[in-house]
Structures are given as C-alpha cells and as structure tokens.
Image (cartoon, rainbow, N blue to C red; front, side):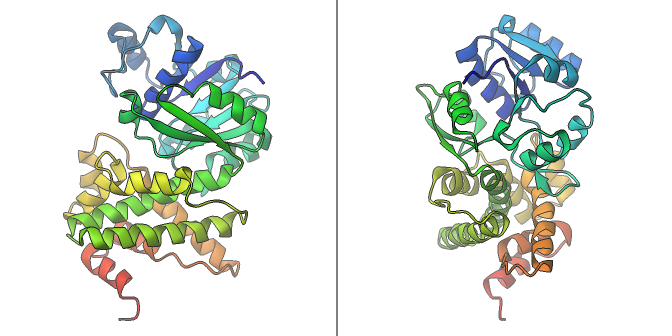
Length: 335
C-alpha cells in the first residue's frame, strides 16, 4: 500500500524532526507552517528558525504553505504534529473533506474542550474511517532524533498494511519501527506519561530522592494500565517501549519538557511563571485537566478507577495545593 504524498502539519521541534526523517525517504513533502514569516525565514536560512536550528533542509524538496486547506486538499497522508492546545483551533479551519485521507497523529495531548484524543475526534468530526487513522508513539526526544540517535517508534493503526507502509517512511539506520493496533491506548498513554512526568519533576525538586522516584514511576505505570483498561479493555503489553519506554524517558530525562515543568513547580514557580520561562509547551499541564475530567466521568458511570498520581498533580496545578503537602498526602493516604 502506498502512502501517496505526505504532508507534515506543525512546525515545532517534533514536527521538524519527523519532517527531516520523512523527507530523507520521499525527497518531497508538504509542510503546513502557521505563520508566513516563519516560512520566509525557513527558506532563507534553510532550517527551522525557531526549533532544531542545526537541522538543515533542502528547501527545494518542501512545499510550504500557511493554508491548512491547501495542504489537506493536495496531500494524501497528513501527519499532525501540532501542540495539543491549538489542535481544535486548527481543525476548525479545515473546510475540505478529509474522509479519504490517511491521517496520522504524533500529538501527545488531547483535543481542547473535547476530552478526547486526536484520532477519536477526527473520526467523529470528519468521518475518517478508523483504518485510515494512525498514531506515532514511543520514547522519542526530538533533539535526539535530530542528532540521529537510535530511536524506537511504534506506529499504531488498525489497518496493518497501512501501518507497515507508513513505518517504511520512518525507518532508517537510526529509526527502528514496529506496529500496533492499540491506537487509542497509545494516544492516551502519551497523555498520561506527561502528567506523571510532571509529578516526577515536582518530586525531584522537593528532594524526594531516587528511591521514591522509582516507586513513583512504578505506581504510575500501574495507574496508566488501569486507566487504559477502563478506556479500552484489550490486552496490551505495558512493558512495551510505547508504554513503559515512553514513560521512563519522559519521567527521568532532563530533555523532557514536562519533567522540567514539574521541576519548576516543585521549586515554587507558579504555573504561569513556569510556562512563561519555558520555550516549549508542556503538554502535560493541559492533559492533566482533561484526564482528570475523564476519570471523573468514568467513575460517574460506576467504573472503579484509582488515580492518586493524576489527582495529586491536578490538585497542585489547578487547585494550587502546596506541592510538598500534596505529595506527602499521596504517599500517606490514610494519614
């Protein structure tokens, strides 16, 4: 099965890294970049002026556009890599059919105001069949992919042939790929691991130490497993790189923006101050509220779901609970 013409939608660090990976195979891509001035500077400098500036491109291979409807109309495979807080705003601008497209998401967040992940929203709103929806997951810092460091990615799609075909344009000497049919599970896991990474960062700044960090990550994986089973009760290997691997790299690495955001909160930053100081968006801040609401909705339908880590991060970020007291309360639930 052929992917057809591929377009990348988004211009952040992960979008830039994936665009480089794909164009090395295809030697042509469409690329939606929101601001025309960014496109002009990109063409002049031959690199993204805002992210991964050391990553050079042959701009003759790129069909840039700031018109999302042009990109959707002219390309067959649409890879969305936009920050989750702006996803719905962008999709609201789409006026052309998407039903016949192969739509892939590398977004690690939920659709604002919808409390659902990208593929579920696109399926419902644009009528894209489930077999034409896919996601990319796994432990994958954009900075390391740009440096061609060995990275393992998982392409989730219920259509195995499509998953394999798209995997082929990612695979290289430094990108290893495999496929999965757990599309929704991979997407929600990518949201939850950011929440848990924020908690890990908070605990690091509060000097809870490595011993507790290990316990926190272990408990977070159990919590994630329970949450995913409540949302989509299928068998999945939680030790797989797309679940455990992504959780570990996000919850331990200083390259993780969510871990960094959490560390700032733990040092006493307000949410607004931490967001203002960071150059990139910590998706977990937005994901925390959405997953908290989803958990409440599941419980309202008599689903037994225990989410102490998620609840604690929500209290700290949205109810302004004292971070040290909230973490200690989480570790001493009966006290």
